[in-house]
Amino acid sequence: MNDLFSLQGRVALVTGGSRGIGRMIATGFLRQGARVYITARKAAACDQTASELSSLGTCVSLPLDVSSLEGCRALAEEMARREPALDILVNNAGAAWGESFETFPESGWDKVMDLNVKTPFFLTQALHERLKAAARQRPAKVINIASIDGLSVNPWETYSYAASKAGLIHLTKRMALRLAQDNIVVNGIAPGPFASDMNKQARDHADDVAKRVPVGRIGTEEDMAGAAIFLASRAGDYVVGETIVVDGGVMHTRG
Image: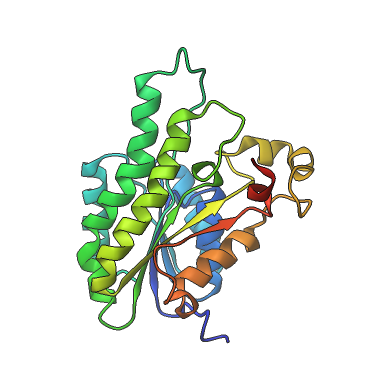
C-alpha cells in the first residue's frame, strides 16, 4: 500500500503553489517523496513558501505569471532547463471576481477565464514533451483544480468564476481523451470550503461555514493532499477524465 501511493522519485510542478490549495498539494507531494516545483506570480511569497517546505524535501520556487501564453511558455522553458521529464502537473493557479450582473466588467471576465481555463490548456500544451518523456516509464499525471461552483450554483454573483470552473471540468474530459494515447492521465479535483485567499469565508469564518457542511468542518491540508496524492500516484492510474469532489458533502445540500 505504501508503494501504491508513493511519489518517490517523481517530479511535480504545482502552479499557484505558494498558498492555499496549491500549498496543501505541494506539501502532500513532498511528504510522499516527490521533488516539487512551485510557481506563483509574487516572487517573495513563492520563495518563502519554497524555503519553508524545503524542510520536507526538495522544493524549488519558480516565480512566474502564467496568465498569458508567453508566461506558460516561459515556465515550460524553465522546467526544461531543470528537468528532462515532468511526472506530475497540477494546474491550480486561479482567480475569482464577484460583482453584480449590472456592472460586471469585461476585465473581470477576461482575467478569470484566461487564468482558470486558458492557462491549464496552454501550460499543459507547453509541457507536453516533458510529460511524454516521463510517461515512457509510467503514466504522467495532469490534475486540474476546479471547484464545486463549476458543478452547482453558489449564492454569489461570481459569473466568470462559475463559468470558468464548469469549463475546466469539461476541458479535463476532452484533454483526458487526447492525452491518454500519450500515457498521460488527466483528472480534476473540485474543492469545496478550504481556507485560502480565494475562499476568504472559509479562511476567516471557518466556524460559520462549517455549520453548512454536512461533516461539520471545513477542509484540511490532509483532505486536499490525500485526493491529489491518489490521482498523482499509481493508485489513480485507471481514473481518467474524472473530477473528484472534495467538499465534505456540500454538493448534496445544493439544489
